Length: 333
Length: 292
Image (tube, rainbow over all chains, first blue to last red; front, side, top):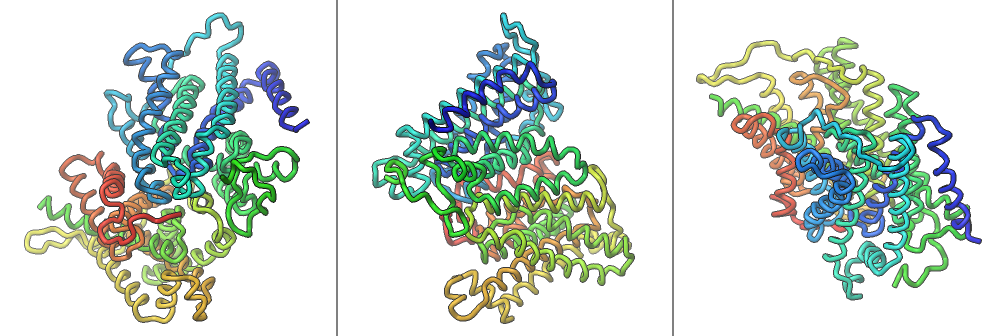
């Protein structure tokens, strides 16, 4: 039996029990892990699978959070409708942000999206009549109907549910025609075109999908914290997102989940180091990149037989782990 | 008068942006690494100057020389510790590694020179009052910054043009394999390149230190302004970085003066977006798109 079939239900069972046995702080941290898992999956679709080096994920996260909160304040839309609407609004903005990607690649795309993300943050601060400025917005609790649990537990299960949904959705997307098109564009745009894949179309789809994930995560984040503020969606947030997918493993669903867990836990653990926490965080990041070129997923793939994701690509170069000897046909058409 | 004031402050800021952008480009041309820790190099340059000039009470020229020498060593150490193991890594990994390194440098500055929110003043080098020339007021430090920036650019130009090491660096940037074939030790050239690029950032920090307060997070904004300068000039072009630096400085200054100070922070982002959407090659760049 493949280990995946055993590990995943076990993990899910443990996570369902968690809010009833752990203290509120840990329940909160695990809820954050769920939200970051959604973010990491979305960014991995764009960066790890479609190979688009964009810096806008933190801004998409913020757009989702603000959209959900502002829909409620300005239009009275309830959270349950605001959350998917926020995701769709973010996806629409993602399509617009993705437009330069049709022309730019690599670092140029990174710079353009970075500038977009910073302008978004600037707008949040300098447009107080609409966004309520640097002070942020307090978000009211959404109702959970007949649920017998407390508010925090409800939010925990909501985040868990959406995260599980996101994992399965991503799993299916990357193995579908769309996912294979992403990988083909990532590995060679010219070859992809020769196979009849329209790069413009699939890049746009990748941006929209990844923005949708980030938007939903943002909406969840706003009710988890009951608060949205511009500094929550800064460049540091972007660094965390990048660290999740690179340390977890580019182009890997497992890696996204592991990266999200690690990058949520790390700052919490390092808090005890006080002034040295920045040094420790930066150093750990560098060590991971130097010594785990495939990310955490690479470690799992080597240790656990049968845990190989077909569309994962090992980084080029002799320094990295040797490429798998058997290449599945759909990975390299 | 107001116009003249904006012009001089724009030019002096522009000189700083140009220096920082030049450091970024020097490293990028030779190694194809965009150093996201370059803003922190700038910050450390200022703090090194503070350490030698204020803490150890050395005269300013000596502190300047020592701070530049320390930055040279820091740059070469950076290359050896952080980037040589990642020579063959992907762009994404390199960017993230340099971001990680920027955290280490920022943390180092915070541990050494005070906690979050601490702003350290740097004593002015010249205490004489603003000059008045033909009814126009000139702030001496602006002149010092502009003059210093131009002087360092001239030194850099002469270095690349006339010295053997400079020529070796240009050859390596042009074609690594060919450079290695004619006997240039490209690892050594990389180390020197990192050293010089770091120095350029640090010099900008040293020049700016007397007019601003020092704090560990001061590098982040300057990095963005340097990006804007480099992209405007054409990423990879050294004359472009200088031209772009001055334009970004002037735009910020005039936008701040005539539209309102809150627009200053948005200006570099608008410049980056506009250039990349309209003309990705920038003003003096040649290659439209770099494949990564």
